[in-house]
Amino acid sequence: MFFVFVLTLIVLGTLAASDRIMKMAPATKDLITFLKQSEGWIGIVSVFLGGFWVFRVLWYIKYFNFGFFLALIGAVTMFLLGVLYSQTLLRQWSSKNSGATDALNKVVDKAAPIKETLGLVALIVAILLIVRSI
Image (cartoon, rainbow, N blue to C red; front, top):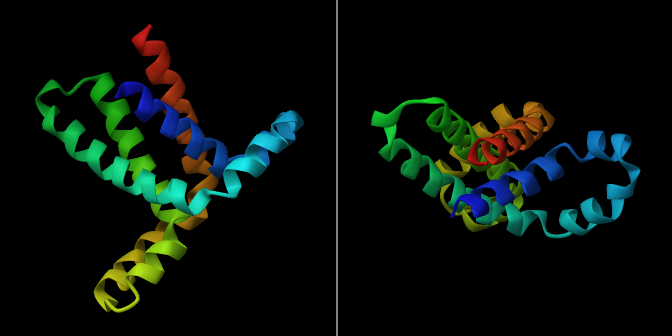
């Protein structure tokens, strides 16, 4: 399950920081274009995985250490980026529930300005978790 967590963070980080990554490595353009075609569904999966990982990480709060801190940051980042990428689908599904739509709008309004930063955080956390597991 660890590698699913790390792989999801890498995909989300690549999508969120795609402009900066394409400037640094132009060869990634095809991969990023491929990922952007499915960003709504990647976001939906990330919302569910992010929620799952937040609760799973919080279960181990008694072992508060650097690994716990990294995993919690990664899970929250995964959830926020998932909401940003799946917002169109979530709005369609919650169109009849004004409370859910208002909550979604609040999260998107707070997270949208820092999307690229969240993407870089996701990539850094993924790299640190991989290095830590070696």
